[in-house]
Length: 325
Image (cartoon, rainbow, N blue to C red; front, top):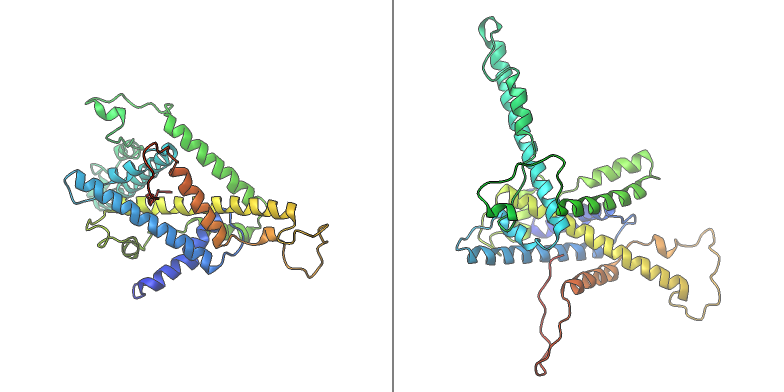
């Protein structure tokens, strides 16, 4: 995959990665290549907009390097997404710490076995377990605009304490888990295995170099991203695909209801004809198409671009700014 061109890479994303993410998000049909290509183009445009705005924020701070805080600043108004991203980074740090601890523990065990007379080697016995439990505890991520960052001393954390953002994140997570449970409860074993494999679809896992080229690093911004920035962008792109797919499914559902009431394009039809054995599938089994995705994107943009009253003189239409999904 290292020798393919960018055009082939984008085709691979549209035909493989995006299709798997759409399937996990609720699209049970087989979307057309035009539909997946449209979602790929929208998501890429969103990533370029993210990098552009982060680059502007970095210039305001007097630096040329994009930081993790810049990405958090762009999504600060979405409390649920911000909280999910904090959890994502916290668990990533826990896994990294646990992996490093296991490697050091394995080296210590080898040294203990090689010790003469089976003597105990410092760091190879019981105290390492206590240290591991302490180090593997999730660390709380504090942003510069959080109240906790205003003070030099912080209040000790409690295990039963939960902030408002965490509550919103849990509600959104439980809502999506419930929807996923509804989709998978009637699946067979093979179908559920396929669905589980699709859940692991990623833009960045073992594809960081191609992802940087696809996102526009080196063109949109000269900043060299670290692993955290790449992982955050991968997290945000999956959220975009999921949001677009869920909104497109809502548009398609509304269209199906409208067609069932009005008889579709045939307005003169008296009653609905009974379905025969060799008839094509019903409209509800048809996957989302470009029109559904285009309308979903329009709705998501119109929600962000709220109309404002203009009390001044008449003026020409102005191009609105692209809003992040």
